[in-house]
Image 1 (cartoon, rainbow, N blue to C red):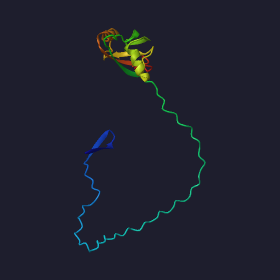
Image 2: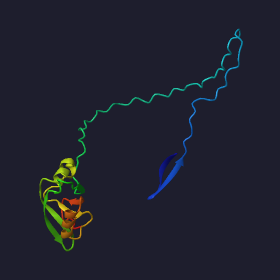
Image 3: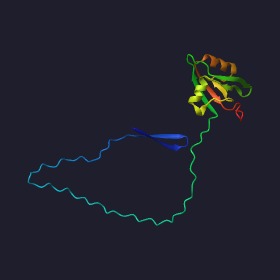
Image 4: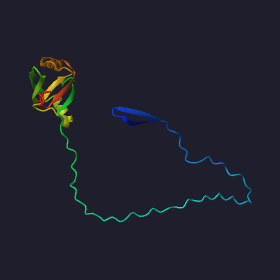
Amino acid sequence: MFFCCTQEREGEVVLDKVKALPVSTSKEVQPPPLSRIDESPPEPPKEEAPPVKEAPEPPAREELPKEEVPPKEGPKTVPPSEFLVTVKKIEGNMKIGLDTVARSSPTIGCALRVQKVKDGLVNKWNANNPDKQVREGDHICEVNGEKTDTEKMYGVIAESWELTLLIKREWPPPNGR
């Protein structure tokens, strides 16, 4: 069964169900009647094809000089201003490898500003995710859902084996949100 979506009204989607039917490429054919060896086979009925009408040729167009179009550049990737980083601590590699400083604002909240990226889990993340690298000056705005207090954020980093960090390039954001 196939489903097809159509847009009826803004914000409303209608699903149509379409049942697939088996496809037959030929009509059921009855075997020819048995004939005697000395009889010639019957001729199939002749079908006349409808006459073919030729389409009139379109009028000739003047060719206009072609403008040169500069070659298109590939899409430019803009690094995200906000993204998630997930790292897992393992035996022998327990350090996330960041020097941070706590920042807080009574109106905007708190964040951990990345002072330095060192050897550790985040450096490994950076090697595997070149478009979402954690850099000096970035801000960790949430750790495993904790975003209310920098001391609690540090506690989650120390105690958790798996960390999901919300990274923002700017904090506080330029528009104050």
